[in-house]
Image 1 (cartoon, rainbow, N blue to C red):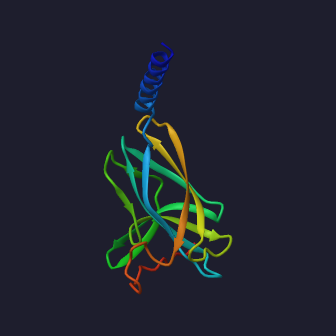
Image 2: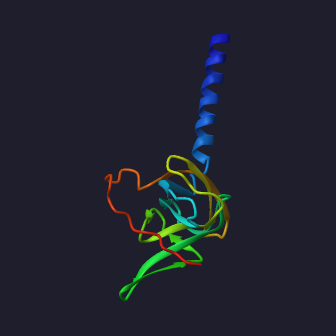
Image 3: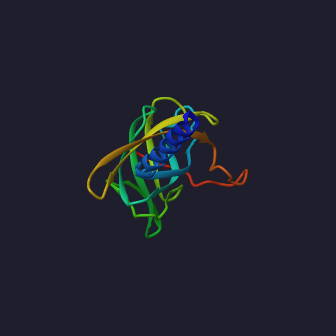
Length: 165
């Protein structure tokens, strides 16, 4: 009798755990391949890059990092013959569609760096999102710092992040 009670208790616990997992909300936004470009002494800004996928759709409304005086979401875009970079107030993340933040496109800009970001270090980064209902959520990341994108060919030229404020 004790064995069957234990077995019944185990079965009930397993069932309840399964129900709890099924009801747990999936992460609002999935982040893949995050990295930040290394900087050198005297360099005041650099970029952070990643792929963002929102299961239900969301908006990236801000970013912050204790490593930078200012952290903004930026867009680089060709305007005639001139590549321009500007801060964007929000970045839409359509439901289920990956949005890539990459050199030469959308990215997180770390400005007024408090210290250089050396290769093979990490930088803390907090992303703030709003879902379709306006509910805000934050995602804290520890982003690896590299000279180029993970998996990039060694010696491959990467777009420069010339930016003046």
